[in-house]
Image (cartoon, rainbow, N blue to C red; front, top):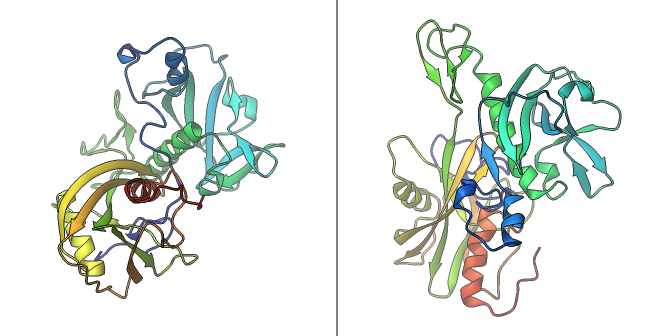
Length: 327
Protein backbone atom coordinates (compact mmCIF):
# COMPACT_ATOMS: atom_id res chain seq x y z
CA UNK A 1 0.00 0.00 0.00
CA UNK A 2 1.62 3.27 -1.14
CA UNK A 3 2.32 5.67 1.72
CA UNK A 4 1.46 3.16 4.44
CA UNK A 5 3.75 2.49 7.40
CA UNK A 6 6.22 -0.41 6.99
CA UNK A 7 4.77 -3.87 7.48
CA UNK A 8 5.22 -4.81 11.16
CA UNK A 9 3.35 -6.83 13.77
CA UNK A 10 1.78 -3.64 15.15
CA UNK A 11 0.62 -2.27 11.79
CA UNK A 12 -2.01 -4.00 9.61
CA UNK A 13 -0.23 -3.33 6.32
CA UNK A 14 0.69 -6.02 3.81
CA UNK A 15 -0.08 -9.15 5.82
CA UNK A 16 -2.10 -9.46 8.98
CA UNK A 17 0.20 -10.55 11.81
CA UNK A 18 -1.44 -9.15 14.93
CA UNK A 19 -2.30 -11.32 17.91
CA UNK A 20 -5.88 -11.66 18.98
CA UNK A 21 -8.11 -8.91 20.21
CA UNK A 22 -11.00 -11.37 20.22
CA UNK A 23 -14.06 -11.89 18.08
CA UNK A 24 -16.56 -9.12 17.65
CA UNK A 25 -18.93 -10.55 20.26
CA UNK A 26 -16.36 -11.04 23.01
CA UNK A 27 -18.10 -8.05 24.59
CA UNK A 28 -21.74 -7.84 23.61
CA UNK A 29 -22.61 -4.26 22.73
CA UNK A 30 -26.32 -4.54 23.18
CA UNK A 31 -29.34 -3.21 25.01
CA UNK A 32 -30.16 -5.56 27.91
CA UNK A 33 -33.83 -5.31 26.95
CA UNK A 34 -32.95 -7.23 23.79
CA UNK A 35 -31.85 -10.27 25.78
CA UNK A 36 -34.65 -12.80 25.36
CA UNK A 37 -32.78 -15.89 26.51
CA UNK A 38 -33.54 -18.85 28.71
CA UNK A 39 -32.67 -18.69 32.41
CA UNK A 40 -29.02 -19.55 32.96
CA UNK A 41 -27.93 -18.51 29.49
CA UNK A 42 -28.93 -14.93 30.24
CA UNK A 43 -26.69 -14.77 33.29
CA UNK A 44 -23.69 -16.03 31.32
CA UNK A 45 -24.13 -13.51 28.51
CA UNK A 46 -24.99 -10.62 30.81
CA UNK A 47 -21.55 -11.07 32.39
CA UNK A 48 -20.01 -10.27 29.01
CA UNK A 49 -21.90 -7.07 28.19
CA UNK A 50 -19.99 -3.82 27.88
CA UNK A 51 -22.08 -0.65 27.81
CA UNK A 52 -20.15 2.30 26.43
CA UNK A 53 -20.68 5.71 28.08
CA UNK A 54 -18.98 9.09 28.30
CA UNK A 55 -20.23 10.78 31.46
CA UNK A 56 -18.94 9.18 34.69
CA UNK A 57 -21.50 7.93 37.19
CA UNK A 58 -22.73 10.21 39.96
CA UNK A 59 -21.73 7.97 42.85
CA UNK A 60 -19.81 8.19 46.09
CA UNK A 61 -16.87 6.33 44.56
CA UNK A 62 -17.11 3.32 46.86
CA UNK A 63 -18.07 0.76 44.20
CA UNK A 64 -15.03 -1.11 42.88
CA UNK A 65 -14.12 -0.17 39.30
CA UNK A 66 -11.66 -1.40 36.70
CA UNK A 67 -8.77 1.07 36.30
CA UNK A 68 -6.91 0.82 32.99
CA UNK A 69 -3.80 2.84 33.80
CA UNK A 70 -1.37 3.50 30.93
CA UNK A 71 2.20 4.72 30.89
CA UNK A 72 2.62 5.17 27.18
CA UNK A 73 1.38 1.87 25.74
CA UNK A 74 2.18 -0.05 28.92
CA UNK A 75 -0.73 -1.14 31.11
CA UNK A 76 -0.62 -1.34 34.91
CA UNK A 77 -1.36 -4.87 36.14
CA UNK A 78 -0.97 -7.14 39.13
CA UNK A 79 0.93 -10.19 37.94
CA UNK A 80 -0.09 -13.63 39.17
CA UNK A 81 2.85 -15.69 38.01
CA UNK A 82 4.03 -15.86 34.42
CA UNK A 83 0.71 -16.87 32.89
CA UNK A 84 -1.85 -14.57 34.51
CA UNK A 85 -2.28 -10.88 35.29
CA UNK A 86 -5.12 -8.77 36.65
CA UNK A 87 -6.42 -5.25 36.04
CA UNK A 88 -6.54 -3.18 39.27
CA UNK A 89 -10.02 -3.24 40.81
CA UNK A 90 -10.55 -0.45 43.34
CA UNK A 91 -13.20 2.00 44.48
CA UNK A 92 -11.08 5.06 43.77
CA UNK A 93 -7.88 5.80 41.87
CA UNK A 94 -6.43 7.23 45.08
CA UNK A 95 -6.48 3.69 46.49
CA UNK A 96 -3.76 2.88 43.98
CA UNK A 97 -1.71 5.98 44.82
CA UNK A 98 -1.70 6.78 41.11
CA UNK A 99 -1.55 10.49 40.15
CA UNK A 100 -3.44 10.81 36.84
CA UNK A 101 -2.36 13.14 34.07
CA UNK A 102 -5.71 12.62 32.32
CA UNK A 103 -8.69 10.37 32.99
CA UNK A 104 -11.66 9.22 30.88
CA UNK A 105 -14.74 7.22 31.78
CA UNK A 106 -15.29 4.32 29.34
CA UNK A 107 -18.56 2.70 30.44
CA UNK A 108 -19.40 -0.46 32.36
CA UNK A 109 -18.41 -4.09 31.94
CA UNK A 110 -20.77 -6.51 33.66
CA UNK A 111 -22.19 -3.52 35.54
CA UNK A 112 -18.74 -2.53 36.84
CA UNK A 113 -17.43 0.90 35.83
CA UNK A 114 -14.28 1.22 33.72
CA UNK A 115 -11.84 4.13 33.53
CA UNK A 116 -8.90 4.91 31.24
CA UNK A 117 -6.04 6.76 32.92
CA UNK A 118 -2.79 8.25 31.64
CA UNK A 119 0.16 8.71 33.98
CA UNK A 120 3.46 10.52 33.64
CA UNK A 121 6.15 8.69 31.61
CA UNK A 122 8.41 8.68 34.68
CA UNK A 123 5.80 7.30 37.07
CA UNK A 124 6.99 4.20 38.95
CA UNK A 125 4.33 1.54 39.61
CA UNK A 126 3.08 1.02 43.17
CA UNK A 127 4.39 -1.95 45.08
CA UNK A 128 2.96 -5.24 43.84
CA UNK A 129 2.05 -3.81 40.42
CA UNK A 130 3.94 -3.54 37.13
CA UNK A 131 3.63 -1.88 33.74
CA UNK A 132 3.54 -4.33 30.85
CA UNK A 133 3.13 -3.83 27.10
CA UNK A 134 -0.50 -4.29 26.08
CA UNK A 135 0.28 -6.84 23.38
CA UNK A 136 2.29 -8.96 25.81
CA UNK A 137 -0.77 -9.24 28.05
CA UNK A 138 -2.87 -11.09 25.50
CA UNK A 139 -3.79 -14.44 27.01
CA UNK A 140 -2.73 -13.30 30.48
CA UNK A 141 -5.81 -11.23 31.28
CA UNK A 142 -9.43 -12.19 30.58
CA UNK A 143 -10.45 -11.73 26.94
CA UNK A 144 -13.25 -9.27 27.75
CA UNK A 145 -10.87 -7.14 29.85
CA UNK A 146 -8.29 -7.24 27.07
CA UNK A 147 -10.86 -5.80 24.66
CA UNK A 148 -11.73 -2.99 27.07
CA UNK A 149 -8.00 -2.39 27.59
CA UNK A 150 -7.66 -1.93 23.83
CA UNK A 151 -10.49 0.60 23.89
CA UNK A 152 -8.88 2.38 26.83
CA UNK A 153 -5.50 2.54 25.05
CA UNK A 154 -7.08 4.25 22.06
CA UNK A 155 -8.94 6.79 24.20
CA UNK A 156 -5.79 7.60 26.18
CA UNK A 157 -3.76 8.05 22.98
CA UNK A 158 -6.46 10.25 21.42
CA UNK A 159 -6.74 12.43 24.54
CA UNK A 160 -2.95 12.79 24.81
CA UNK A 161 -2.48 13.78 21.14
CA UNK A 162 -5.43 16.20 20.92
CA UNK A 163 -4.56 18.66 23.67
CA UNK A 164 -4.32 21.45 21.10
CA UNK A 165 -6.38 22.32 18.05
CA UNK A 166 -4.99 21.02 14.78
CA UNK A 167 -6.30 24.09 12.93
CA UNK A 168 -5.38 27.10 15.09
CA UNK A 169 -3.27 25.64 17.92
CA UNK A 170 -5.49 26.71 20.82
CA UNK A 171 -5.91 24.38 23.83
CA UNK A 172 -8.89 22.06 23.36
CA UNK A 173 -11.74 21.27 25.73
CA UNK A 174 -13.86 18.17 26.22
CA UNK A 175 -17.08 18.46 24.23
CA UNK A 176 -20.07 17.88 26.55
CA UNK A 177 -22.14 14.76 25.87
CA UNK A 178 -19.86 13.16 23.28
CA UNK A 179 -16.42 11.61 22.95
CA UNK A 180 -14.81 14.62 21.32
CA UNK A 181 -12.43 17.53 21.89
CA UNK A 182 -13.58 21.00 20.86
CA UNK A 183 -11.52 24.09 20.12
CA UNK A 184 -13.03 27.09 21.96
CA UNK A 185 -11.37 29.51 19.52
CA UNK A 186 -12.28 28.18 16.05
CA UNK A 187 -14.85 25.48 16.90
CA UNK A 188 -13.00 22.54 15.32
CA UNK A 189 -14.20 19.23 16.80
CA UNK A 190 -11.85 16.23 16.93
CA UNK A 191 -13.18 12.72 17.52
CA UNK A 192 -11.11 9.64 18.43
CA UNK A 193 -9.17 8.52 15.39
CA UNK A 194 -9.90 5.22 13.66
CA UNK A 195 -7.79 3.90 10.80
CA UNK A 196 -9.78 1.28 8.83
CA UNK A 197 -7.82 -1.57 7.28
CA UNK A 198 -9.12 -4.42 5.13
CA UNK A 199 -8.01 -8.04 5.45
CA UNK A 200 -8.97 -10.76 2.97
CA UNK A 201 -8.84 -14.54 2.61
CA UNK A 202 -8.52 -15.54 -1.06
CA UNK A 203 -9.61 -18.98 -2.26
CA UNK A 204 -9.35 -20.77 -5.58
CA UNK A 205 -10.96 -24.18 -5.58
CA UNK A 206 -9.68 -26.05 -2.53
CA UNK A 207 -6.60 -23.83 -2.16
CA UNK A 208 -6.01 -20.66 -0.14
CA UNK A 209 -3.54 -17.83 -0.79
CA UNK A 210 -1.28 -16.94 2.13
CA UNK A 211 1.70 -14.59 2.20
CA UNK A 212 4.70 -13.70 4.34
CA UNK A 213 5.57 -10.09 5.14
CA UNK A 214 9.10 -8.73 5.06
CA UNK A 215 9.15 -7.85 8.76
CA UNK A 216 7.61 -11.03 10.12
CA UNK A 217 9.50 -12.27 13.20
CA UNK A 218 9.34 -15.86 11.95
CA UNK A 219 8.35 -17.86 8.90
CA UNK A 220 4.63 -17.28 9.46
CA UNK A 221 2.14 -16.83 6.64
CA UNK A 222 -1.16 -14.99 6.83
CA UNK A 223 -3.90 -13.32 4.85
CA UNK A 224 -3.35 -10.05 2.98
CA UNK A 225 -4.24 -6.73 4.61
CA UNK A 226 -3.80 -2.99 4.19
CA UNK A 227 -5.16 0.43 5.06
CA UNK A 228 -8.15 1.98 3.31
CA UNK A 229 -7.28 5.14 1.39
CA UNK A 230 -9.37 8.36 1.45
CA UNK A 231 -12.30 8.24 -0.95
CA UNK A 232 -12.03 4.46 -1.31
CA UNK A 233 -14.78 1.92 -0.69
CA UNK A 234 -13.82 -1.11 1.38
CA UNK A 235 -14.22 -3.47 -1.58
CA UNK A 236 -12.05 -1.17 -3.70
CA UNK A 237 -9.37 -1.27 -1.02
CA UNK A 238 -9.45 -5.09 -1.02
CA UNK A 239 -9.02 -5.23 -4.79
CA UNK A 240 -6.22 -2.63 -4.81
CA UNK A 241 -4.21 -4.19 -1.97
CA UNK A 242 -4.32 -7.66 -3.52
CA UNK A 243 -3.48 -6.32 -6.97
CA UNK A 244 -0.51 -4.33 -5.61
CA UNK A 245 0.93 -7.04 -3.40
CA UNK A 246 0.39 -10.28 -5.33
CA UNK A 247 -0.84 -9.17 -8.77
CA UNK A 248 -4.17 -11.04 -8.64
CA UNK A 249 -7.61 -9.76 -9.68
CA UNK A 250 -10.44 -10.72 -7.31
CA UNK A 251 -14.03 -11.78 -7.81
CA UNK A 252 -16.92 -12.42 -5.41
CA UNK A 253 -15.73 -10.23 -2.53
CA UNK A 254 -17.84 -10.84 0.58
CA UNK A 255 -17.86 -9.30 4.05
CA UNK A 256 -16.70 -11.62 6.87
CA UNK A 257 -16.41 -9.63 10.11
CA UNK A 258 -14.38 -6.97 11.92
CA UNK A 259 -11.96 -6.62 14.81
CA UNK A 260 -10.49 -3.63 16.69
CA UNK A 261 -6.70 -3.33 16.76
CA UNK A 262 -5.52 -0.65 19.20
CA UNK A 263 -1.90 -0.14 18.07
CA UNK A 264 -2.67 2.60 18.04
CA UNK A 265 -6.10 3.01 16.43
CA UNK A 266 -6.94 0.54 13.65
CA UNK A 267 -10.12 -1.33 12.79
CA UNK A 268 -9.67 -4.55 10.81
CA UNK A 269 -12.50 -5.31 8.37
CA UNK A 270 -12.44 -8.86 7.07
CA UNK A 271 -13.50 -10.22 3.68
CA UNK A 272 -13.38 -13.42 1.68
CA UNK A 273 -12.86 -13.53 -2.07
CA UNK A 274 -12.15 -15.76 -5.04
CA UNK A 275 -10.02 -15.07 -8.10
CA UNK A 276 -10.06 -15.81 -11.81
CA UNK A 277 -6.35 -16.71 -12.13
CA UNK A 278 -3.79 -18.14 -9.74
CA UNK A 279 -0.56 -16.62 -11.06
CA UNK A 280 1.20 -14.72 -8.24
CA UNK A 281 3.47 -11.71 -8.72
CA UNK A 282 4.70 -10.44 -5.36
CA UNK A 283 5.56 -6.76 -4.95
CA UNK A 284 8.95 -7.48 -3.33
CA UNK A 285 8.55 -4.60 -0.88
CA UNK A 286 6.02 -5.59 1.78
CA UNK A 287 5.63 -9.21 0.65
CA UNK A 288 8.62 -11.55 0.41
CA UNK A 289 6.71 -14.71 -0.43
CA UNK A 290 3.18 -15.82 -1.30
CA UNK A 291 1.83 -19.19 -2.32
CA UNK A 292 -1.25 -21.36 -2.65
CA UNK A 293 -1.80 -23.92 0.10
CA UNK A 294 -4.28 -26.68 0.76
CA UNK A 295 -5.87 -27.49 4.09
CA UNK A 296 -3.30 -30.26 4.61
CA UNK A 297 -0.21 -28.25 3.64
CA UNK A 298 -0.60 -25.04 5.66
CA UNK A 299 2.54 -23.23 6.89
CA UNK A 300 2.69 -21.66 10.38
CA UNK A 301 -0.29 -19.29 10.66
CA UNK A 302 -1.48 -16.59 13.14
CA UNK A 303 -2.78 -17.58 16.59
CA UNK A 304 -6.41 -18.36 17.35
CA UNK A 305 -8.96 -15.56 17.86
CA UNK A 306 -7.17 -13.09 15.57
CA UNK A 307 -9.36 -12.18 12.63
CA UNK A 308 -6.67 -13.53 10.30
CA UNK A 309 -6.91 -16.89 12.04
CA UNK A 310 -10.71 -16.76 12.04
CA UNK A 311 -10.64 -16.27 8.28
CA UNK A 312 -8.25 -19.20 7.84
CA UNK A 313 -10.29 -21.38 10.20
CA UNK A 314 -13.42 -20.66 8.14
CA UNK A 315 -11.57 -22.06 5.13
CA UNK A 316 -10.40 -25.10 7.12
CA UNK A 317 -13.95 -25.83 8.26
CA UNK A 318 -14.88 -26.42 4.62
CA UNK A 319 -11.83 -28.42 3.56
CA UNK A 320 -10.46 -30.30 6.56
CA UNK A 321 -12.10 -32.96 8.73
CA UNK A 322 -9.47 -33.12 11.49
CA UNK A 323 -8.73 -30.09 13.73
CA UNK A 324 -5.55 -28.16 12.92
CA UNK A 325 -2.72 -28.85 15.36
CA UNK A 326 -1.52 -25.24 15.51
CA UNK A 327 -2.49 -23.15 18.60
